[in-house]
Length: 516
Image (spheres, rainbow, N blue to C red):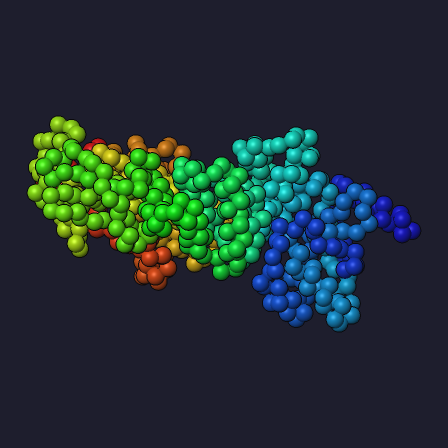
C-alpha cells in the first residue's frame, strides 16, 4: 500500500472510530490551547519516570481536518514534551515511535473540553489556568454556534450538556480573574492566587469603588486608573491584599486631605455591610440624660486596628457611639436602654451590660445575635464563603449556614487552602448550631435543593462529611487557627465568645433560642 493510500485509510478510520497506532514523535505536537499555561511542577519527575520505564499508557491524540500531524487530545502535553526532550538527548528509538490512541475529530471545543476534564481529574491546574481555559472555551462555543455572546447561564448549561460542571458561582470569579485581574496581576495569579483571594480582591475593589464615588473623588474611569496602577505596582508571586488596600486608603486620604484612619473606618464599615448612614466620618453622641437624643461630635480617635473600629468616651456626661459598629458600642451602665422594639423584648428580663477589656458591650439577645451575624458574614466573605451565610434575627444564634462550600473548590485549591476553608466552614456551622439545632427549626430555613438540607432531613452524616472536607479535629490548630489572618482570628474568637454569651443569657432569662 502506498504512503498516500495508507494515510487515507487512517483518515477514514479516524472518522468512524478510535484507533491504535504507533506515531513518530516528530509528528505529534502539544495542544495549542493547552489549559496549562504555567510550568508543571512535576515535569522533571515525569521525565525521569519515562526515562526509566517508558510511557505507562498510550498518548491520546487527534488530528484536525487537513493536517498531517497529530496533537494531544486529552492531557499528555507534559509527557509529550518530556519524550521529545528525551529523544533529542538520547536518540533512543524507544522515544521515537510512540503508542497512541487516535480519537476521531469532532470540533475545537471538544478537544479543549477533553483537556479540561483530564486536568480536573488530576486537580493540578491553577485557578487562573482553569479560568482562562473556560473562557477560551466560551469563545470557541460562540464561534461554533454562530452567536455573538453567551451569558454565564448559557455557558453553564452548554458545559453541563458536554459533561463539564461549572456553577454560576464559579464562572463569575473566573470572569473577573480573566477580564479584570489578569492584565494587572499576572504574577500573582500565575503564582497561585486562588478563588478565595480573587473573591476578596473583588469585594475590596467594589467596596472601595463605592466609597470613592460617594466621597466625590471621580467616576468609574478615574477609579479604574488608580486601581489598575496600584495593582500593577504590588503585583508579584507573594501577593498581599493588605498592601493594595493600604495603598487605596492612602490614595483616598491624601486626595481628601483627611486622616488615614478616617478612611479605614469608613472602609471597614462598608466591608462589614453597614448601611451608608452608618459610615459618616463623625460619630454620633448620645446624651446621657436621654438615649434618644443624638448630636454630632468630634471624629473618632485615630487608634485601634483595621478590623475593629476604635471607640472613645467623651467627658463624663456624654457617650460617643462609633456608628461603624453600633452593636458593640460602649454603653455606660447608668444609661437606660433604647425603648424596646417589641412587646416580647419589653416583657423579657433586663440583662446588664458586660465588660470586655475596657469596653462595655450591649448584652441583650437581639444585639448579640446581630453581632454574631456580622462577625460570621465578615469571616465568610473574606474567605470565599460569603454566599453561604445568612442572618437570622429572631431565633437561634443570629445566623445560619445556607449550604456547604461549593464542591468545585476541591478542584481549585491546594490542600492547605482547602483545609482552611473547610475547617472555617465547620467553625461557622458550629457557632450557628447547624447540626444540633432542632430539625423543625432549622430545616425550613434551607433551600430544598441544598446538600445541607438533605443531610439534615435524612440525618445523613455521611453525606455531610463527604461534601465538606472533614479533617481530624487535631488539625484545627495548625491548619486554621495558625493560618488565619489576625483580623479573622480576632473575629473568630469574638464570634465564639458571642455564642457563649447568647447561651448564658438565654439560660439566665429562661428564653428558648430555637422555635420549631
